Structure formats: structure tokens, C-alpha cells
Length: 371
Image 1 (tube, rainbow, N blue to C red):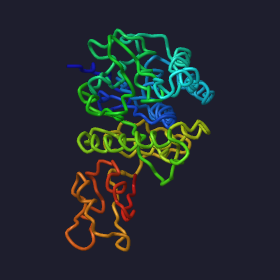
Image 2: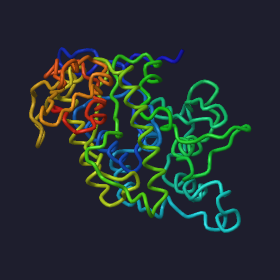
Image 3: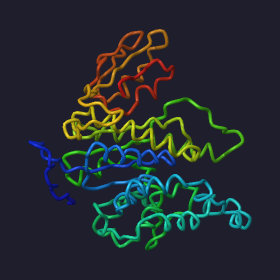
Image 4: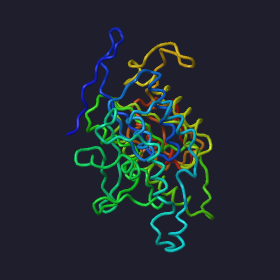
């Protein structure tokens, strides 16, 4: 069983022992640039991590951080990212094979870009232990590169396999098996993170959609496929949070749900949103608020008001009494025994922050606050 080494204590006067901490960076396409903002917030607050677990775009940012890149280096690299750096249509293969082509975009083009930006280190040589997941197409099971038996793979290939969305890039082939995006089955791998025996998990979830927007389904089949993938990702993440969230996990959900998976328009704004949300959560969550560096910082006030609960409200004029809220909530926050559902926990301290009730409400009657 994997286990992290115990960290040294913080140098502050009479500090609490710094908990062994795992940082989990979830998948989400270009929304994952918010991870850089989270890393910036950790640096600002003086919080440290002992291992990184990344999925999809989280594996890319995680590999850069674990490989020793400074925040300045990372921010400089991502500020120059353009869509053409990653996506080059498989024109020749489409002309020759049509629908039998292995992918819409050339995986080699993406892989070469990864070679230019990723640190040239091997698993076991990173600044902190690093793990990233991929799905084996033949079995549907997950592997976590970096675990025993899965370290003899170049970092570039591990990250490529974790980022290779189905149909978008070719699968990564190894020993007769094919591997693709780990977010297909575990976009926020809390269950694996717990096998490292941490005392604290800081996790970043990018799956929450903040607004309703109808994709152009009629003229673009790719948007339908991407949305289908995202719906499956949201439901799986919802279930994972139901099962794995506890008081030791500080969950950060940057407000980037309005962005498309491959939105390259304003990377700096995505980073800023990640930083702001991370500071808000980490300075108020019970697992981290006593660990933050409480020094005067512009725009940051200490101490802060605890924000451990989620406020829950139902609009009675919109509720139709279908009972879905009660069926999907993991913490018994709703009662649907009458004509209208009622809230049992207006200030829900047990909420797993999966947004399941609001996402599944067919009339939009449920609103959540203090998130």
C-alpha cells in the first residue's frame, strides 16, 4: 500500500503539525488552467502538499508542478497557449479512412507540444510524488501511472494518455493495451488519493456547470459528443463525491462552469478564478483555516468567517413535488412527502457539494448558497 512520508513541522510559533497532504487536480479541458490559480493560492497561504494526483488537464498542470516548475514558469507557459498548439485535424487520415480514422485530431501534434512544455524528469524523480490516471479501453479499468508497476513510462506518455479524450486524440498504446482520458471514469480521484494515507486532501473539481447553455447540436456533432462525455463525467463525479467527501477534504470548485471545454479565450481570467475560489475555500474550511499563513495580504483578510455549510432553498412556486431532490441527496437534506418538497437542512453541514439536487431538479426550484 502506498503511503506518504511524514512532513516536517511548520516553522511558526506553536503551530499545528502540518498534515500529510495530497493535492488532487481534476479534469475539465481548458478550464483546468484554474489549477494554476489554485497553486498560486496555496503559495500565498503558505500551504504545502506532499503528493499530486492529476486527471486529464489536471495531469498536465500537476506534472509541471511536481516536476519543479515555478509558478512564474507555469504562468508564462500557459499564457502563450493557443488552440492550434494542441489541435491539428487528422485531415489525411480522414480523407483515406473516413469514419474509420482513429481520431479527429492528430495525437502526435499534441504529444510534441507536451514534450516541449513538460519537465524532462521520470516518475520517482519529481519534486513530490506524482500520479495520473488513464482508462484501459480493453477492460474499462483504470491505471494510475506512478504506482508500483506503472513507473516505467515517460512522463509525456503518461500525461498524453490521461488527456486523450475519446475520439479527439488517438489512444496511447502500451503492451497491447490502449489508454485514454482518466476523466471518463474518475475526474476527481479522491478514492485513489485516500490510498496514499493523507491526513488532508485538497481537491479541485471543474465539473460543475454554473449556467444553462444550449450547444449547437444540429450542425456540430462534436458538440453533442463532448456534451455527452461531460454529462457522464458530471454524474460519475457526483457519485464519487457522495461516497468520498469527508471533513478531511477541502473541495475547491472554481467558477468556470460557463466556459466550454476548449475555450482558449482568456486563460488569465481562468487562472484568476481558480486563485480566488481557492483562497475563499482554504481560508474558511475547517480542515485548512488553521493552517493558512495569516499575514497581511492585499485583498485577503484574516481571520475569516467559517463557511463549512451549504445553504439550501426551494422555491415553492416552482416545485412540482417530483421527489428527485430527496432521491439524489446523499445527506437527507430534503423531504418530498407532500405536494411540495421541503428543506430539512437549510444550513447543511454534511453537504458533499456535488450540486446533485440542483442539477437534477427539472424546474430549477432548488438554489444552493455559500458555495
